[in-house]
Amino acid sequence: MIEGMGFQTRSLTDILESMKKTSAGIQGILGGIGAVSLLVAALGITNTMIMSIYERTREIGVMKVLGAKLFDIKKLFLFEAAMIGLLGGLVGLMISYGGSVLINHIAGKMMGEFAMDNKISIIPIWLAGGALIFSAMVGIISGYYPANRAMKLSALEAIKTE
Image (cartoon, rainbow, N blue to C red; front, side):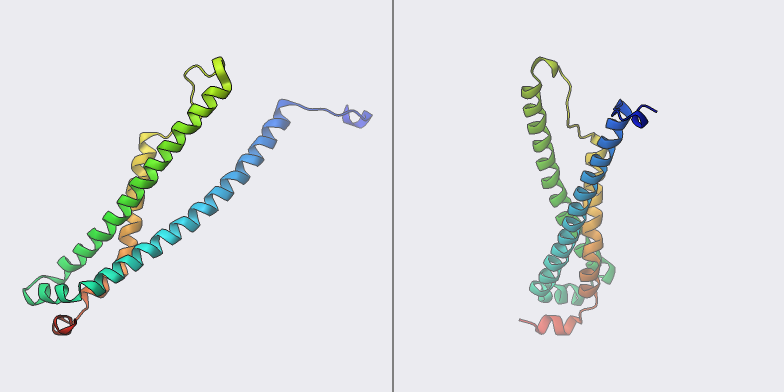
């Protein structure tokens, strides 16, 4: 009714809706960046594991000749891929915690006495644990194809390879 009279109105609800839209846009952009990073990391792990198979072809052949089970060879490469993913997750988590501390420090200085002990950036322990489990799973999924490839190598051909 007031707007119909030619006046402008604002309420906290309007501001809140605007902030929600902005936040959703930022989350979408960050989600897209995260998805591309995940894809690049998965391809990097797969590439690393394939190169590891090429470099250790003779070793795989020796393991097969000595009687190693195919599943054991597969487990070895999947474990390696999981460790690569987990170490990448640990590095990412350390960077995240460092960024969080930096944000809280800068925000604390900007807010002065109003800051008290409030923190802007908080990373809960369950989120950190979930991120580590997720990064290990990405490693396992990325290493699945190379592990199968290592498992299918011919023992005699592998030993002949230089």
